[in-house]
Length: 245
Image 1 (tube, rainbow, N blue to C red):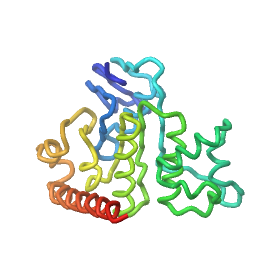
Image 2 (image 1 turned 120 degrees about the vertical axis):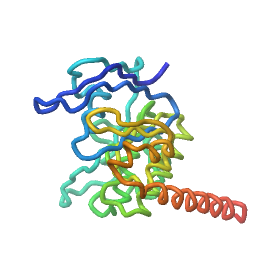
Image 3 (image 1 turned 90 degrees about the horizontal axis):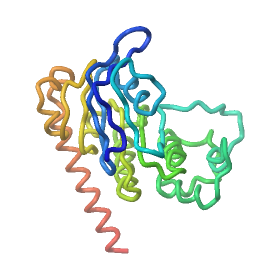
Image 4 (image 1 turned 180 degrees about the vertical axis):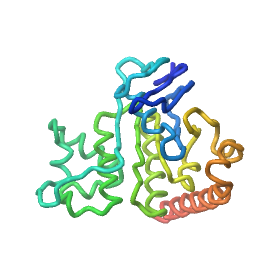
C-alpha cells in the first residue's frame, strides 16, 4: 500500500491549468525528489499531495492516519522577539522534553536547544525546522526548497542528514528542489515536471533523459559523480574516525 497515490491528476492554479496527467505513488522508505523549471507545477503538486489544493480532475489518495512532517523554504521570525529553540518547538502545542530532545538529535542539532532563534545561522535554522517536522514521527517528510540560501557544502550536509533520518525512522521523503547537483544523488527516484511528468526514474535514468537535458542541460552527470565521490569519502572518513574513537 503506497502512502500517497495520484491518478490522472490535473491541477489549476490562478485559473490556469498548471499540471496534467500525473500518475504517481510514494512508498514508505523511499526518497523522491521533484524537479522542474519555475512554473512547472512543483509547488502545486506538493500542495495537492498534502490536501491543500483540490484537484481539477483525477484523484489523490492518502493512507489512513498518515502523519506528515513539513519543512518550508523559509520561515520569517521577528529578530527582536526573544525565543529559544525549545520555545519555538513548543509552539503552538507544548511538547514533551524527551520528544524535543529526540527531534533535535535526529536533526543533528541537539546542542541548540537553549539558543535564541535569531542567532542561528541559515544551516542551523533549517535543521531546527527539520526537527520541528520530526516531532510527530512522520510517515512522510516533505521538504519544499528546504536548502534555499545554503551553500553547496551546507546543502550536501543537509541532504546527508535527511538520508540518516530516513534510515532511522523508515519514513518516506518527498523533496522539491533546485539543487540538482546534490539532490539527484540523495534521491532514490526523481520526478521531472514541466506541466506534466517529463520523465521519472532513478537519478541516472533521469539525468540521461532527453527531456531532462532539454530543460537543464547535461552538466548534472559530472556533479552527480563528484557528489558521490565526496559522499563516499565522507562516509569512509566518518567510519575511520569512529573506529579510531
